[in-house]
Image (tube, rainbow, N blue to C red):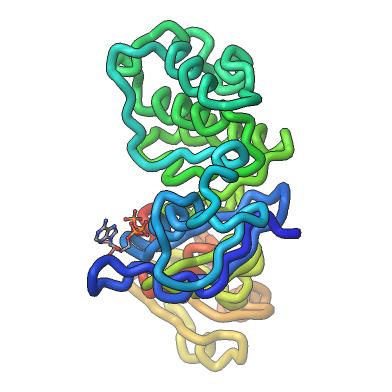
Length: 304
Ligand SMILES: Nc1ncnc2c1ncn2[C@@H]1O[C@H](COP(=O)(O)OP(=O)(O)OP(=O)(O)O)[C@@H](O)[C@H]1O
């Protein structure tokens, strides 16, 4: 049985439709990503799944419970890390974990979590004195202290530097290795690509695409782009006449050729025959970024 089943979820704020019609299911042991541009309805969706908001329509089941009517049943099994967690500035990391652990019947060992999350040397530090990355790790620890079977992590690494982001990814992978299902909300394509088994792309309150990262990228097409430099005359018309080529752009010494299939072979052969030697040759394939752009009409933060 899936851990999460959502069918036709709808949520409005007064007359504003935040989530229009969202359906997906999450299997046990998956890292499932919800990816989408700002305001797409991602946070509202996870808030409806965790019982923090009441939906206006549709069906939601988490471990067989309806979060609207059965919130208490989910308290012990679902750990939630929401955007912008705040604690008392004068509470230490160990105190916060101890306090949160006391809310649960069968909590995780706070000291073990402190180690897992790489917080050993900050365990006695005040929340108010922690860096952004350390706070994020504490927030994840708090989401895990109840020994949940499902961890919901919203905007896990927003505001973190690249090193802290990678460290946090490792933590999430370790959490999954312990058998916890992870629902991850993110803006970041690289994060979704690195961590997620499957991704639902949400745009304007609807699921615009749902697939593995590889599946989403390949649905964006088999487009390839060759870029190179040359000061020699480029046989533009012959290049355009190649069946695998869709576009040729020459900008001074910079040449871009788009196409598909055996593009690299066909273009290299033609340039060789014309006596043109390309330098700085680069070949790019359709990526998850291209897929996101095609699906949502927007660039991700990293690509923008
Ligand atoms: N409490 C609220 N009252 C009114 N409108 C809201 C409220 N919360 C969210 N919205 C609106 O609902 C829409 C969806 O918001 P939501 O926060 O779910 O999107 P999101 O995809 O998580 O965005 P972001 O990536 O910016 O966090 C947005 O247009 C937002 O302005």
